Amino acid sequence: MHTHSHTHSHIGDLTTQTTKRLTLSLILTAAFVIIEVTAGIFGNSLALLTDAAHNFTDVIALGLSWYALRIALKPAHAGKTFGYHRVGILVALVNSTTLILIAFGIFFEAYHRFITPPEVDSALLIGVGTVAFIINLVTALMVKEGSEHDLNMRSAFLHLMGDVVSTLGAVIAGIIIAFTNWNWLDPFVSVLIGAFILYNAWGILRQTIHILLESTPENINMDSMVTDLCNVNGVLGVHDLHVWSISENLRMLSAHVVINNISIGEGVTIQHNINELLAHHYNIQHATLQMECEDCDKGLLYCEIREHQHV
Image 1 (cartoon, rainbow, N blue to C red):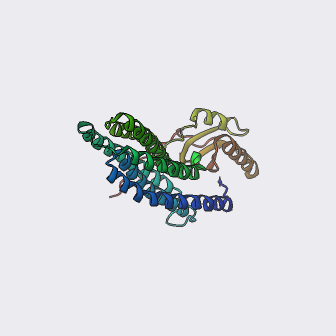
Image 2 (cartoon, rainbow, N blue to C red; image 1 turned 30 degrees about the vertical axis):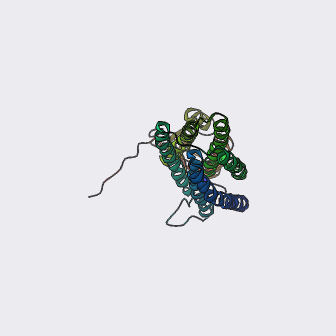
Image 3 (cartoon, helix red, strand yellow; image 1 turned 90 degrees about the horizontal axis):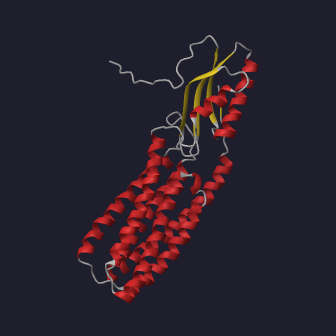
């Protein structure tokens, strides 16, 4: 026995709106990458080249996020019984991993520039950095909506916010260099940017791994859940309990529920009450419940699943 609800029409409308914002953000970012690379080379600025490299990964990240949003709407079928909801998690994994690699690349290049700081064209750094800051901020705000509850969108938003911070840092470094000729500030700002990117990327990476390992959602207390389930009228016990996530907001539960030897109608009422509890208190819309009589083998609360090798 199971229950789940679908709101494909509403989700489809939201996806269409989000896709349009992503497309516009992608076009703006791609166009500016070319400008910023040219300016970084002529201005001999690592901060600008760093931001251009990050902007280029944003183009990839936004493209992947767009693709994930589209493909996640494809219906489940015999080959993909859970549908394509995990695509967004895989994209978040790719995005966060590339961010970490970029951060270490920034550290490597900054190290060499600390040893021999090159001359930096501060005027070019300030001018291009200011334009980059405005464009990055606009694109980040366009992607922000929906990123609070979607790991895929949040990974794309993190890419863009990394650019906002990095361009702001580049502008500040350019202003100080203009007055002090401290060229070492350029790689110093790049290191700060890299640290910011690394810190936030690790948070996304940790969450994606948590979901891919089918771990219990972090904000669910299993002891409290077991207590709440057992407090449902008619429930005598719960075992073989599993709670996991397909994506950040799509949670699943399966459990064996022990009840008295009652009619099917009474069992359906208990099932309905359990589903209401799970939906309202734990945001679990898809629960598979197996009803068992009191004399059945109760098993373990969390059953042990072992691999069986066939010869």
